Length: 328
Ligand code: ASP
Image (cartoon, rainbow, N blue to C red; front, top):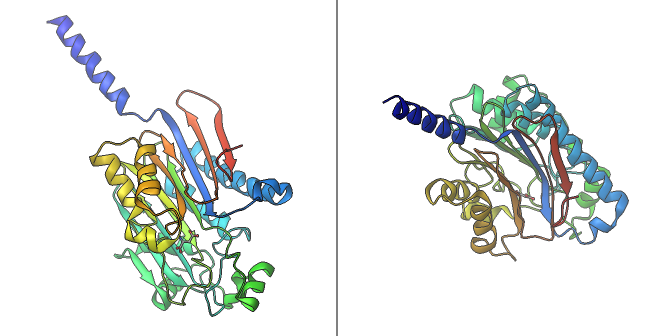
């Protein structure tokens, strides 16, 4: 009887240990996907992106290390990217065909599936904060345009009077020319598994270059550009939004993981390489599962991305950033 009980206890312990994420925390970031021809070889330009991705990872990791919540880390990281002119979010965002800046952002908490998003905001300094306010301070999931701005103002968020606040010398040139086909910087995203085992995902963007004003892409759409569910994964996408919406990419990945029991890499590859047409549905994604396994595939020329994690029981973090197939 005694050995039977001991056996049962050992079994329960094994199950409990298995259920624990093997990683203390994980943070992944992306700074957009695209053609990026030869960027890896332009050392100075590439170094600026590597440094920014690295800073973003460490901003998030500092919060996670202290036991901070995943959503706190995601917001801090995306705020940083929204202030960094290298990326297509906040300052540095790409412009519409009429030369305006219309920003989208979303965030999702895997613990209770709560989510918030804003679309087409033109005067909110940090769209990711507005998305978070929609999630935490309103009964809604998504707000758009003027209504979203009025809501952000009522929440005391930082606003900017002039839409050109989001312009940089580079994007101003696009506004003037509106012909250049080099198109954009990169959308930004962050997914996190925190120490408490909770998953969070967030995405922020200026959208696609020369988009029709009023157009909304996948980034603020829960299930398309962003999704998090503690029973599966946290996902943030970047790429040609219309395709990511049609394929509900972020949610489909989570569903494949949860219901088909596919490992995260397999689920991510299936969507990117088998479901999305590589020519038209160009882009990539970052995804982390509830056990801390992750995937960061892309079907475009490159994708700015990076990861940082800490194994349970270890005092060291492991991190890498990169643009092309190989991370450095
Ligand atoms: N997915 C974004 C959009 O379609 C753009 C991007 O990721 O570059 O708005």
